[in-house]
Amino acid sequence: MSQAPTSVATFYRFVALTQLEQWQSRLEAQASKLGLRGTVLLAEEGINGTLVGTQANLQAFVDELLAHPQLVDMPVKLSTAAGQHPVFHRLKIRVKAEIVAMGLPAVRPAARTGTHVNPQRWHELLDDPTIPVVDVRNTYETEIGRFGQATDPQTETFREFPDYVAKHLDPKTQPRVAMYCTGGIRCEKASAYLLDQGFDEVYQLDGGILNYLAEVEPETNRWEGECFVFDQRVSVDTQLQEGVYQQCFACRRALTPEDLESPQYVRGQSCPRCFDDLTDAQRHGFAERQRQIELAKERGTVHIGTDATKQAEHNSAKKLMKRSRGGNGSA
Image (cartoon, rainbow, N blue to C red; front, side, top):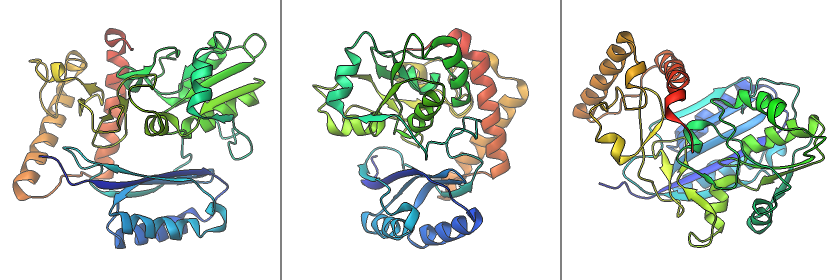
């Protein structure tokens, strides 16, 4: 059964922030009061968030956020999501070392980034054989959808992007590079990094894939497949509606309807991508988590786990993806 349409607000800004704990407390109190759910990350380099709620309450939150002098002109994208799954189960306001983890604190997108291009210019770049087009996302994202002319760097995390650049891109022979990502934020840091490395011109798809799909009609856009999103929907199609994929809890990869029919798929525990890589301890842990989820459903509540548990699950998923990568391939 589909959920009622939900309003979604996404925003980010690379800007020097201080007193992060005060930011965290203030935003958490306001978002909680308004009944919002989602994630906001805060770091000394800026803010990055996606929140869901009623349109009126989201607008009230955004109005107060933009009243801060450092965020007054921060772009905020408002959209509607409807599908079988709620977009987020809970609210998380977190202080991090980076809002986009590259592991290179010297890279400063607040100082300079690449040239933002609209869909028409993006199509011209896709058709230009002299300009490499790089997908800045990771393998579990690229394998379900991409621009066909783009290069997949085969990265498991964004921290591997500098190594990809060192091995495959040369500012002396390829002074111009184009790139894209889901919503634009990773391109901000990736383009800043390329400019620091001496590339002359770096282009980035304005607003990323999601903005592109919102602006270009499905029958005329160049996107192939679906777009992975970092919420309960898992993916969206070219009309920004919830896609056909579900997600394996164990390895986090997107699963097709065919994957779900496999005997190696056990809800909440394994899928054909990771079945052979699971340890007995992992199987036990995932089975217990699924049991808790089912019990929560019977009680009419949502199982959200503890932060420590979620971090352990995240680390386990990363290890599984790394071990299973060789047999999975990427689109």
